[in-house]
Image (tube, rainbow, N blue to C red; front, top):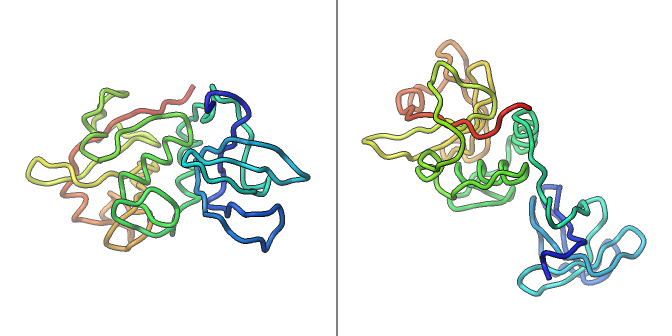
Amino acid sequence: YWAQDPLLVVTGAEAPLLANPYLGARAVTTVYFTTVLKELRETDDWHLALLPDGQEGWIEGQAVQRRPAHCLFPRGTPDDLLATARRFIGTPYLWGGLTPRGWDCSGFVQIVYKAHGYVLPRDAGQQLAAPIGSLVERSKLAPADLVFFGEAGKVTHVALYHGEGEYIHATGRERKVVVNSFDSSSPLYRQDLDDMYAGARRIAVSP
């Protein structure tokens, strides 16, 4: 059933699923970036949609894109990944979170990559160890590489390399998604993370 078209993908940060096809109707639930819905029917610019848990409701057309089941998340370039990551700068940090309402470091990276066709494990240590892409030397970092941090041999944090020494990540210290830098002369520099650098993995490459 879920392998059949048409399917809808939530492309905004979040959107309400409503009991009726008009603004102000009772909210059934909220759906978030990259959520997949089964389209049941369309009225004007509203879609009646079904969630995997059986809930159904109406969602505005501007909140979703209709995509074929075999290509829900087209493979993206490093630039695509970074553009998506930048959209969410300032969104809240939440340990264990996987949505723009709140996400942790590895959840943020996992969802940004998911939006562009890459499947990553859930936790930072698993992402570094995963047999996906290739390990990269620190001196050869490229945009959209995953950079990892840890101590005592344990990976505890992950970020998305932005280029020019900067990286984007969901951090518990600032309680949000921010940009920091490896450049000690930058106001965005964080020495604690610089000292905890634990490796990098390249998954997305330019065509």
